[in-house]
Image 1: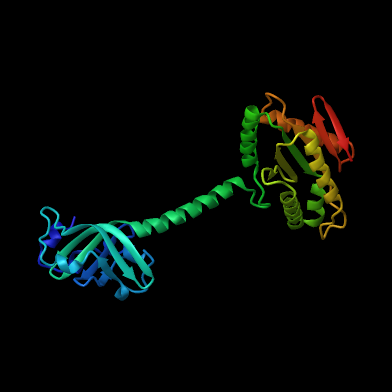
Image 2 (image 1 turned 60 degrees about the vertical axis):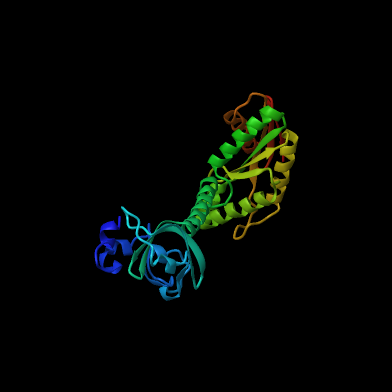
Length: 301
């Protein structure tokens, strides 16, 4: 890449194009024989280890021993490999090539290990955030519907393998539309967030709380049979009934539907039965828990 320029009787700074000084994909620096950096491009500065180029120097290999080294035929390289440098904020390593023009050395790093490490850390962080975004409901911080579906499918597969019980609790807030109409969307959102916090604090680490719809929530309860789901639902119903979420003047109540997985049952059928139990709770006057077992429903209010 630099062979034709290196053989010309001009300084490096004369032939290096302006775009290369602005490049972030390559680390480029000019150095004296003692390793001190004279000039560098953005890619080198972006390593984040430097406060100013005057405080940066290459420490390995020793550039002074390259003064008598003849450039490699074909590309003008006098050294290729790992190059260590240190600056005011720390040290780093790049893997690249060294060229020489008199007592001035040109370092071109095609792969910056330190920079890639920093970039990989940032990529990992963004990936975790993206993963959380795709799994969580933005308003409540609970799992979203898609992640609930995925986890339910996983638990159903586990049920078929180990035959441990699995239950679902659907929760539909009573008259939630009235809260939205009378108090506005902001208060309605605060109510949802409050209930989401309550649900998150009421479950085990192996359970999953999710926002199922507008004013609907769901609890996925592994290792829990229908009676266990009924107990969880009734406990939550009583807790909601006993609280007043300001600025509301009445407690927020909910209708609950409980269903436990049958042999050979799929996710859609499980949730359909739980939703039928919720509708049965509504028909019975709301603020109650209905569980479905086989073709029969049983309620607690």
